[in-house]
Length: 142
Ligand code: RB5
Image (cartoon, rainbow, N blue to C red; front, side):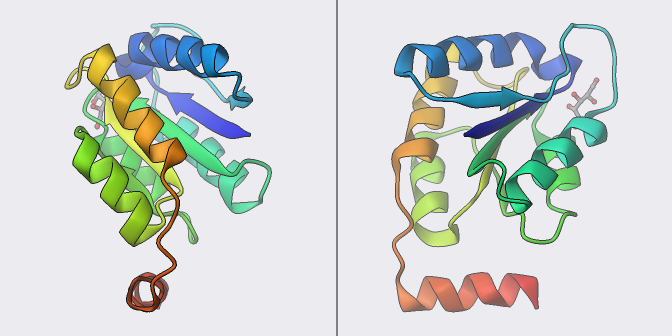
């Protein structure tokens, strides 16, 4: 189960992500927002972050205008490793090296075609399980 959250700045791109997940047959839980009306991104970041930390959802995807505010808010929740990625290399590397559990993107930054490639790499790339990466991830939480 993938937790989804966005603000008004990410709403349009999130509709593309939702359609893509549906085409892939992947289950998701949408925590909103559900319209283009102006709203506050921390609310949706926290909902998605808590769904991931609680184990209700394995991973999360967050989208605001830039991806910056919504990733900052998500990373305040202990256990969340939210990676702001606008390229495929970062999406793959953050799964392999950081075991990122939430992906953030900016709906005003990245086009849908590129964003969906980033989403696929984030969802499909396993964590390396390398000792050095496990040690560094533990260091984040200390
Ligand atoms: C909303 O206008 C915008 O500030 C928000 O979507 C995001 O970009 C914040 O980081």
